[in-house]
Length: 288
Ligand SMILES: O=C(O)CCC(=O)C(=O)O
Image 1 (cartoon, protein in one colour):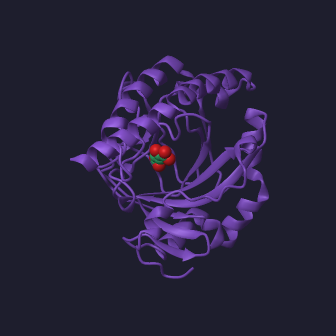
Image 2 (cartoon, protein in one colour; image 1 turned 135 degrees about the vertical axis):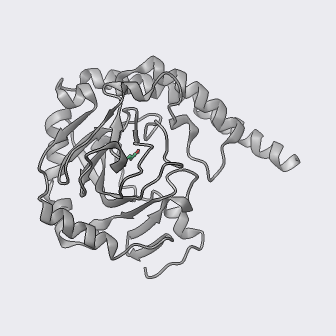
């Protein structure tokens, strides 16, 4: 009982310390979007670019992914690791992701070093960005544990690229789903932040996601666009847009490349480490 009270007290103090900077950050992000060049991407928060990869390359990458799949997170080699989301939190339990896949595949290494992805963003947002990681994400069918609407960070914009490796023709294939323009909805974002902040203080734990990134109020599937497209399609996305992977993925496994991109001004050489805690907790390490 005393331990739980102490933990609550620690969380309360931590969250009180970040409350004001995070609200200010949400407001400043919105101001920054007003200064960006106005185009489809900056207005909608996402854009669909057809035919980025051909079918043969998509099928090849699926085979690469299959050769490393396991139901436990492990280090594949160097900075490349398989992350099973069930090892880090309580949502997306059937998602596996090979992080830093550019370290195990020459074609992905070429793409990583080519600056092609950075150019796509820089042409639209008018500032320099850094590509941090190319991952291969495998979303197995799941109708129970998909994460609901969220943003990737409370504040500070990050970007992602999704390149479907399998056809995503219907909702049952698990499309990336967005609420267009929602990266600019400051008031709705702040209301959701308050709600998430309270949940974070009451229930936050090392294993829970950050509840302050959840978007549970004022949005619904009626406003959403599930992005249906054939294999090889690239989707670029501002991760402050309200988004999720479609929750009723009941038809097939979806394979996709997911690339993590950050504005150069916010990049200070930090190593890409999402989910690495799963590896440090004694989940078997195959090689390093
Ligand atoms: O893969 C998807 O469709 C959703 C991904 C997502 O929610 C995220 O990357 O934050």
